[in-house]
Length: 205
Image 1 (cartoon, one colour):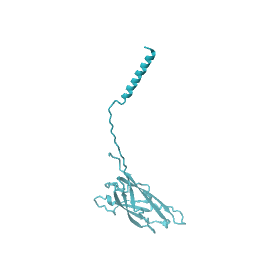
Image 2 (cartoon, rainbow, N blue to C red):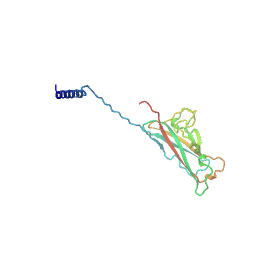
Image 3 (spheres, rainbow, N blue to C red):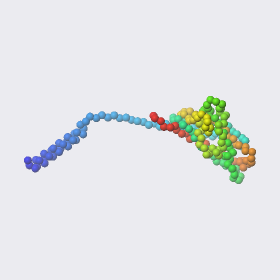
């Protein structure tokens, strides 16, 4: 057989092999299935009403003020706890020398029982569960909606479920310490409370 015929036969064989290989890539059964998934996140929507808890003038040592406010969770997820952060600024009366003491040390906050977390017993919304000054409260981040607030021996019932609210009672007191408090005459204190709602722990869904 001539070299030309041999080369032609080899090329034909190679072409046939490639054709068989190419054709083989489609020579199987197959089927497909498809799924779709959606992930919709929930929301935390913490609100306080009223936004101004207290606005009072002409205070003097010994005065006290009872106030109520409501924290509501208008979101779709439960809140495990609501941490309270305290900040305030003190303004001296015009023309007066700077104070040598912090007015926040003389304003006491009496945390009253959380009515919506009340348990059976002698408690009422007028029961003071913890007292501290604004100055000391700045160093704390208590759970504002826990029924025990700061008292460890009370049964804990904290959190704020979705679409629920808690009515809270608080008392502010300008403490009369029996000493000279004249440096605070004409002063003012602006208090900011920030409530930080935290989600509950993750779970199998």
